[in-house]
Amino acid sequence: MPKRKPKRKPPKSTTDTPIGSDIDLGLEDICVDDGTCLTDEVAADIVETVLRSVGRPSLSGVRQRSPQIAFRVPPAVRDQAAEVAAWEGKTVSELAREALEERLAASCRAS
Image (tube, rainbow, N blue to C red; front, side, top):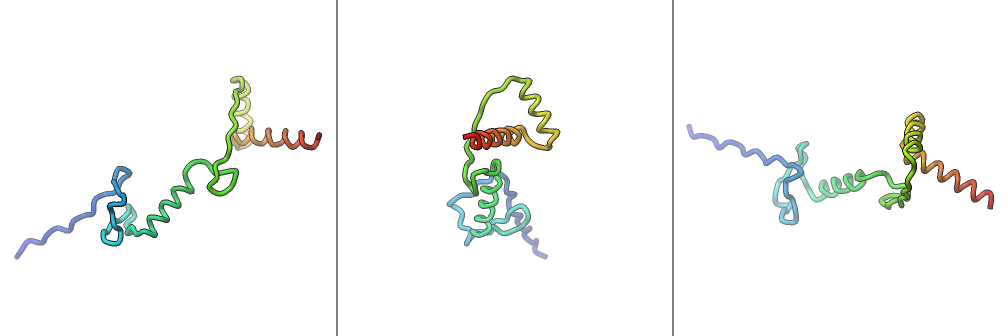
């Protein structure tokens, strides 16, 4: 009886696996880790998902970078802000943003 050729396993794809414009998804079968065959549509969906999930949520709107304000405070103020934020279930950034928004709203009412 002739020996059967063993089925070739597809190479494991990792973050180091090079996939670029030299790959024609219409001609080559490439599968992602869950077994889904990679098509142009699947690749576009993956890219869209990654772009939506990278970084923090925008406060300016969909896919717009939110401006940042940075300032220094004494260690005691930072520690107290961290305690209050943790007690309220917020981040220090959320706490600072709320405080600044309230201060600006009060300033506008006074004008």
